[in-house]
Length: 335
Image (tube, rainbow, N blue to C red):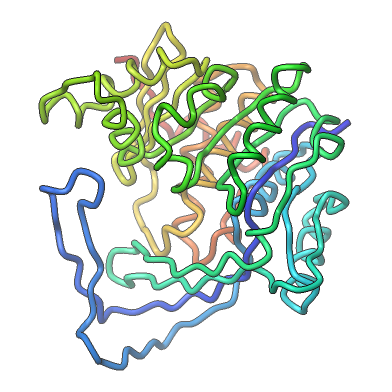
């Protein structure tokens, strides 16, 4: 029996740092409020390039393992050098790889991460590869206490239904950080799973998109951009705990009784890759360990703050002891 199984992508990342990009603010677009642009036709050089491991399932598993939890990754990689390297890395981190599917034809997922060296924000160009053929199997995901679900590709609707059936018919609890395709399905496409979700973790843009997908809800600009309003609406759809992250502004948590808020702690942002994974997994891991949502929020804020201060999605992940030493550094407010 695992403490938790992470489900989602596994990718090999190449991170390309550059100060040649221009950040273009587009506040009029609620779900795309900034763009990273380059001169058309230009050749962009970089003095810092690194190869890292990524993908939602792997990033989150790395955090759970560092927290001391018994974790397995349920993902799919190609039968290639990148796939072998990823499995080796996971094993070195103390993560069980028995549930990783090997694809004989498609290559392991790959991402090119372009990071703005000045602000630390990034744009990711992703090839899903073998992840497109990932298949959730009840026999593989039922022997656990928790599931941490990240972005799904391929026939994701079928996989999501399979996970939902396991949650409904067992004591397995679901922590869910939906991917872009799931968010695009809107409230109607996700409602049945939201009702069975223990912890839902989304960013503010995703929360706005989800709420706007319900045409019965009419909100003005101030309301649709208010995280407290978004939390209240989404909580009514079923999740026991809703978390909305807001980048450098921090994160909000609502458990139906209190809304908690904590600002981000990182003073230096080198690379925001993996920030969401490191926050969500540390929060869920902290909640599993302590049963205290306020402490869990502190776990998430501390871990993500350290991850964005170091290049790569997994290189800055902290251990349970390291996080606990910093708990007092996080300010949590009850709104």
